[in-house]
Amino acid sequence: MGRASTWFRAGVIATVLCVAAVAPGAWGQANAQAGAQEAAPPSRPGPEQASLAKLAGEYDRTIKFLGPAGGGMPSFSGTAKISVVLGGRFLLEESTDTVMGQKVEGLRLYGYNNATKQYEMARMYTMSTAITTLTGTSSDDGKTIDYSGSADNAGASKSPLHAKLRIVSDDEFEVTMSTTGEGGKDAPFQSTTYTRKK
Image (tube, rainbow, N blue to C red; front, side, top):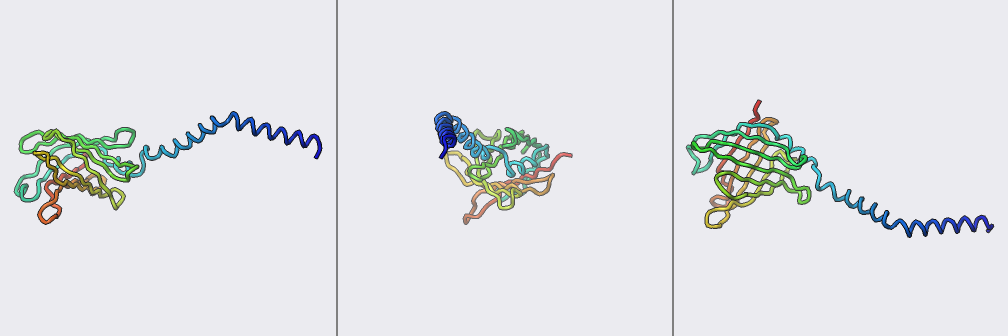
């Protein structure tokens, strides 16, 4: 092996050692950035959020009470404004209804949790100081979402609560609320139809 070849090999080894000594911080930063990029997608909106975002708009609401307690009651009306918030991550619904001559205001927050792979909903209105939270799943790409949770009752008891959000068309969807009735069967007690304002 010639002297020039030996010098070349020695130079390569020295360069590699230099880079190894100086670059761990840079390599660490690169690895940290790669890790951050891998962790970022769960925090960004995806197809489920895009599907929910299609519900944004202004609606007329028709509320019907169902079952024995609601039998024979007239339907009630209201309006809702649904907005996409927090960079496309959630939907915020603000509603105002008139029920039995009384003004009722409500807020609802809809989302999809990328980490748990579940839809989530929080419900609040002026007839209560409770925040009701529900989680749900869909077997048809968000056209129908089945939520479940529990409602707070007087005396600190909780009762099962279910909600089914069903998209009828681009301009209409409905939410049916139910609880567990006799024999463990699902017992709907309220249905709200949303019709997009033209």
